[in-house]
Length: 72
Image (tube, rainbow, N blue to C red; front, side, top):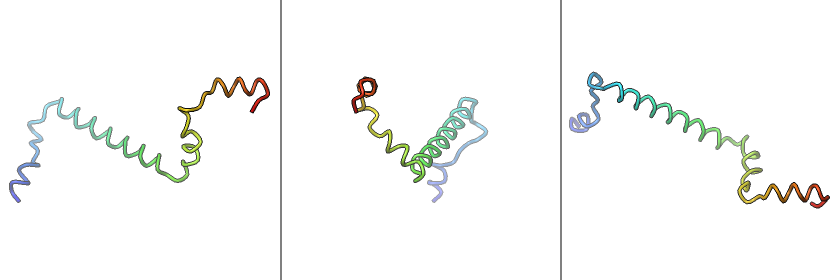
């Protein structure tokens, strides 16, 4: 077990400013990604995502032209 503890041991006193900034950025990104995953998978947000799930395939210009000409 001591080799596993040595492998994961961190020498906090030897960390440079770049190490601290990198660790802070990694933690912030992890927290933001966890928040986005939670937001996306909440059942209350499903309707909005389902409405826009095919936005890449929609041609908005053709839809606007059809609406101007009275077409559906």
